[in-house]
Every structure is written in structure tokens, then in C-alpha cells.
Length: 385
Ligand SMILES: *Cc1c(COP(=O)(O)O)cnc(C)c1O
Image 1 (cartoon, helix red, strand yellow):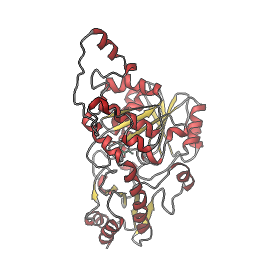
Image 2: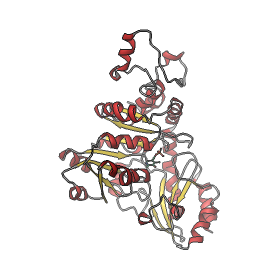
Image 3: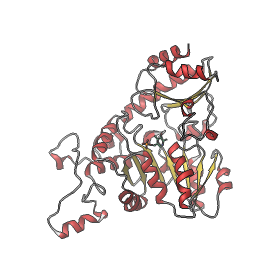
Image 4: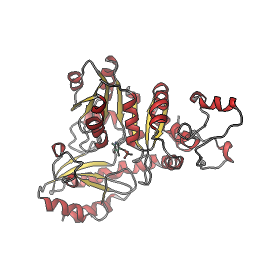
């Protein structure tokens, strides 16, 4: 299906709501029935009839249809946050005694889930570098059920060969999950390469405006239905219809935003790569990236996140660079209109932070939003001076 059709038409049955161009926000918990037959019929998910918003909501359904089409999966479910989607996907595939093979440095919340929560349910995780298929071969145990990927991750951007990992997983009857937030559904479709479940923090690119939180799980109808029956309805981390509506609105401009970001970010990166006060830039589309072959195979266009290591290792110099940026504000998130940094140094001294997993002190993650590269470069130049 043409992407323009997905953004602007798919799932929008306008004749059902006065031919309004924008879909209605069906802000209701209940859907009302007049007969036992009708409510009985609606309670079966197979019929897709709304009966309760922690189940089926028509506004959310529009979003889910569009996301599934963009990710080229049969089906999708929307959740209240990226972490809610990730937790649902992971829990749906495991039981007590199972083992996960995960890439090192998954998203911080996922990392905590694997290290601090899943062990309480007797589920272990083996962390691997993941650059080489041999890492997975060496890690597999009798009780391994799941491989968890992020390609690239959102700090140091290591990638995995999705096709090879998917082949390995299929041969060994393992389920594969990937967090595809970095690439967005436009720059990589892991399901096409054989990955079973694709999750996104929709909070990032799918929203695109830094004003709403949500997550999605995309997979086969069989897996999505299974998650719907348990993690979605029972754990209940559903999205509000208003947030679904904002994500539908976000999707209208996703392609234009991603196109702008793909042209803008490399200009900022290239400025930094050539700056004497910068030690290193880590960017999949950067000049020194160590997995260029995987970038070529899996990432259609450059995305907005990269990391730098400053030359200085002096604490007050690192902090003064960050503080002197006027337009790159500091924040945890990314994917919206505003350009942001997150300095690793901000983690130090916080009780949630495990210093044994720390990156170098002078490590800063950048996100380039929808401002012009010249404007952003000027900001960086001033702060570096
Ligand atoms: C932000 C983020 C998440 C978590 O998503 P939330 O919407 O904040 O819950 C997961 N993975 C990656 C790569 C992220 O950047």
C-alpha cells in the first residue's frame, strides 16, 4: 500500500462520522448494547466490535491499522507508553524458568526489567554484544526462549544483522523482539527481515511533537491476539483515545519530518566530526561508524540521534558545555520537534544509576529535531567556545 494512503486514509471510515476529515476521539469507557445477543457478539475479539475501551476503541483502532501497515505486519496494538508495549511483548513470550538473550545496553527501562524484575519470576537474561551471530550461538541455553534486539540502540548505536539473527532464532525455535524506535517504521521494517515482534516508543518519532506518550507492538495476528487477550486487557496498559488521536495526527507528517531529519542531522554530525574539541562522534551514518555494512542493509535514511565524546574529561568543562547550549535543552527523550541532549554526566550521583554500566563522563547523546542545522551548529559552536 502506498504510504500516503496509510497516513491519510487507511482505517478512517469517514462515512461513520459525518465525513469529518479528522477522526473523532471516541472518549468513552463503555459501548452500550440493547440485547444479550449483541453484547455476547461484541465480547468476542474476533468480531472487532467495541465493547469497552480497555479492549477495543475505534480511535485507537485507526492508529493500530496505520502502524501495522507501516511496519508491514498483520496486526498491531497501541499501549500507554513504550515501556508498557515492551513489557507486554516480553512478558507475553515467557514463563518461569525461561532465558532471554538480549543485546547489551538495551533501553534503560528494558535493562531494568531484565535485571531487576524478571529475575523475581525466575526468568534470566544473558547479555551479548550481538555484533556477530556467534554471540547468540554461544549464549543459547536449553531454556532460551527469546532474543531481544535494538538495532541500533539509542546510546552507542551498535547494530545487529537482523536477517541472520532471525534465521538463527527460527532454526532454534526462539521468538525475536526488536525495539525499532531509533529507525521509526520508515527507515527499517524488521518484520520483513524475519523478526517476530517489533515494538516502538511512539512517544518519539510517531508523535513527533514531544507532547504525548505511547507505545506499539506489531506482529502477526496470532501473536498480537495472544497479547491482546493477556497483557493488553489484563495488565491493562492501554492508550487513551485522545493520545491515539494525537499519534494519528503525528503520522500525517511522519515522512516529512523524517526526511528533514535525514538531511539536517548529517550536517550537524559532520560539523562535530571535524571539530578539534570533539574526540569522537558515534552515528550510524557518520564517517567512522564501525558497522557501515549493516547501516547500508538495514537503515534506509539517516536518523536524528547520535552521541559525541568531548575531548575534555574535566567535569566542570563538560558541564559548562552542556549548560551553555541555549537551544539544545537537556532532556531524557527525543523524537520531537525540539533538539535535545542528554549528558551521561547527569546520571552520576543518582540512586537509580548503576555506575558499573556507565559510559565515559564526557559522553553526550544528541538528538536533532526540526530546527535548521545552521541555527543548531551556531549554538554548538558558541557552547564549545
Ligand atoms: C524512550 C524509549 C523507550 C521507552 O519509551 P516510553 O514511551 O518512554 O515508555 C524505549 N526504547 C527506546 C529506544 C526509547 O528511546
